[in-house]
Image 1: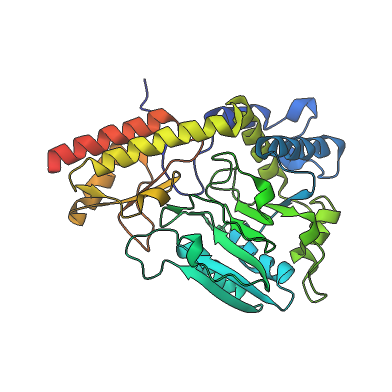
Image 2 (image 1 turned 30 degrees about the horizontal axis):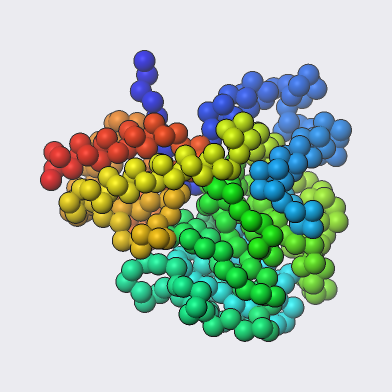
Length: 361
Ligand SMILES: *Cc1c(COP(=O)(O)O)cnc(C)c1O
């Protein structure tokens, strides 16, 4: 039997095997249409069915309330760093909570568009935690408050949904959306680049409460205006048709697994097993994040002796454990264990962690 391959990359990331098989099967001729999804008109009957089903399944998975719109956009999460303030700031002030590299990028981009208050930050904290909400300096005039629910590079995840009263909560959920049930009604806007936990790169998902639409000024480019995309059902121009189709298959697959409650259980088991292996290594490996905020999706860890990093990665690769090299800003290792990473992949990684430490400890 050929060796199983497990891809721990942070993004673009692993997709469910059954989804890839279905894409392969349907690639040249989608459901007898005589065409690949890639070749279809986005306004044709077939494709309108595909995108409508994708949205319906996403709404089912997240129980998205009626007064929220789902937008299928492009530009990545990085474009949302600008689109959020362009659409919601309207010359006012906004609050940002910084918990890692992505939320810091979001706040610095937002500064191009208005007054930005960093109302809480873990920049100086040695414990790598999410600042408790009691310490946040939120003000009623803040047009919104931005968080990154899961910091993909730092491995820091919120363990609570902030309660902000009238101030809309905006969340970058790129790397943990669909990993567990989420009460969408607590948010004003949620965005996510698809290539972590949804589907192929090129698609960006935005879920936005209707009353937040239409606040963009006249200088905001058409393509960067949420209201334009909402009015045109993500068809103002050509949407990323193929990426939306694959995302739709992932939504279907998630429903077949038992939806997000089932995924949350599996994800908790995977993360618990991996952190236990790191913590139980007597310091051979270490993860610095405060226990309550350890990401269930992205697990950065460091070898006590970084001179072994190269050997670790090489041996892991020989065992079919791929893309474990940490982000270039932090170095060390990072294992991303999104929905599509099977429990067997985490078991294989845990076995390797034990074995490597045993031989080199
Ligand atoms: C990957 C990532 C981004 C950047 O996404 P792009 O789609 O590459 O722009 C932003 N925020 C978070 C939390 C991410 O994981």
